[in-house]
Length: 465
Image (tube, rainbow, N blue to C red):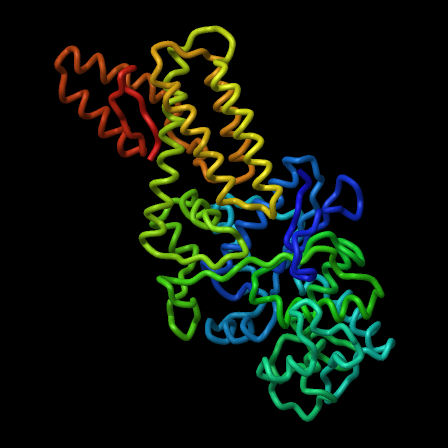
């Protein structure tokens, strides 16, 4: 089955056909770096990481660009509050972004361009729009003429007249039309600014992504993604700017993830119910957060609650316990061909996993395929004799699927597997010798290092918390 992607532009699942065979150019709007990323930011960060991983797993060479908005009103206000500068605030929270996303198991994008590194490209882009008659200068600002782009509104499927009633537009006498949006903002006294043909100022929000996507990926890209909240006006404005400037479609596939609610309430600053990822990682294992994020289809809303996190923990524990059981049986496995039921189960799970991921990246059903492998492995592990090749086949399939989903904990620093096994042997000997103090000491040591011991029919086995 070919990969199909729900395209916001066409409102249908379209077969994915890259511009260049074997290559994918993907741009996803990144954060405005004035604070820690919150749980709402984390959803696209995790989901598009999985998109990238899956496309690489089926053979594509992916160039993945995620920008940083490192200058805007929010950064200017934050710098004033913290008695700092905009570049210092941006640098601080870019590093926090990297720390938090690495903590979530997210692989770094191919490129993370910053607005401040691309000011000249942005100015040149705006000048091109002015020269073509799509933009105009007024009172030190530069605006885009929305009425000159007949298809304005095609992503959100609304026309200009409908949009006038659907959004709040600030009254501004400098604009020719209320829907015109700013490309360049003239600097106010004391603000960070760059020189331009229209005076000192800085870029508007929408133009930066158009300029950077074109610079790093070309006139037309394969996939443009982001949160549902960016569909209008941000992505709509990007399309208008880019297509007027280049004469080509900006992107062939537009992807948008759904909102996150907190305890069934919409997350918003006014309600004060936002949760920073930095805070979450202090109490919730990163694999649990990823599992939770991927447990609903990316286009559907997702509700964050203690109950949902508990369900994610329990689901993940089932998978990890199964894998721990497989590893425990490695030492007693016998040579021989893989068991027929395991070969069949692994092949069927592989088929189901690809089928679901090819269907618009259906991660909840892909996770169900992982559980099908758990259901096949657990009864096999109860058999008195298991073959090494069967266990290795199971582990390989779990690893292949997790290379896409990224929901399993990696080996942590500290005790190695061999050291743990040796401590368990030593503890067993201590118990035989009735040296209860030493046996308890070893168990406490292992517990401190996040190792849980379990008694099974095949002896003591261990797993990481």
